[in-house]
Length: 501
View 1 (cartoon, rainbow, N blue to C red):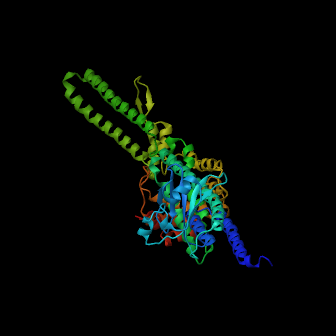
View 2: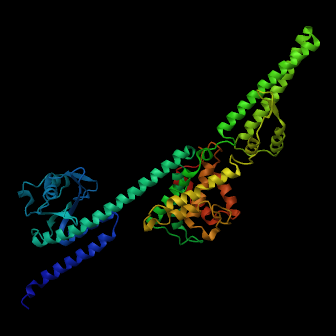
View 3: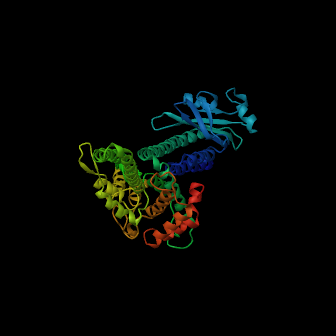
């Protein structure tokens, strides 16, 4: 019973120590610096019973202290290390306890003057990491009881500061890791777009559309996706998967990747040169006929012979030019009319004489096959090569040591070209095996591909026409109709892209 008079003080101290333990647990679990710093300030004020607290973090590169939670300030402020009370504590690592601020020359009254606050007592302690290095400063102002801060307050605030230093270090490290991931993803998107400049912006637009759709699911009250919710880290996972869904295109040959017409540029150049030789051959054959006719009919018939040959040569060159124009028409990424296939087959018979007077085909077999592509610009073999980008994407993303919260990025990106009816690629898996995130990405990917105005091999289609095409695929059992309804009714393109056409 000798210590009865000290029991309230001991109880209060025990409560404060318990509070420090509780806040240590809370701090160790918080990775968001914007949430962690106010938590530390709030708990520091409680522990030392201060009217107000400030927290400054040491920026070693700039030799400054910075804070977003200093003395009621919302904007970031910076102080040189060594300047002011907080700067001195950061510089020396020694605690400063001032019982009367206005009687101490180290106190800068300008803060009170600008804020209207009246500082009386100050307790400023260093925050030290596990190695004993100063990483920041906690500053408490005005003991609520009206008394001065005592040795116990110093001890408690130092203990809290040590725990806070570790938590802040973890939060900063977490922030740096996130910045590292963001930088890696951004660099990867740049690499994708460098290989295929015509699709620049596609990955970002698909990510915006897909994330907007995921967030729209939170407002559903009925249907199969009514209870679907994505956490902040799941949204981040979805965003990364969307941004990187086409990264595997770096493994596709560039000529195939950027093929804008059915013939490659060098193939068209060779074909054009062949037609030029054929034109010269027609002219040569005409002059040979003129000489033969003059020998047969005499010089007096020269004018008549020239007139006849000029008319014939003009007709032959016109026919040759028409064939070339038809070839150019077939070369464009449009749907070839049915009669065009028959005409291309007939062109197998067209020949010209080369420099050795040998008959050569005007169109080569591989050129006819390419020009006969019914839709788009890719042959079946080239289309398979383009489709292989999904496999490349998955293999690449699977090599990255993703964090536990981001581990499904490769899986989500892998399935963005799969169809509910099992007709997609590369694995042809049915709807039940496709992640919801991939189903959303598929809709976003197709919509942007249809409406993008920067593709050299096709024209952009209007917003409503694109929705109609998506609707047909949903009715055919390829796309998720419920998700498409959300995409349309929630006006995802307008919200994600700002405008639609």
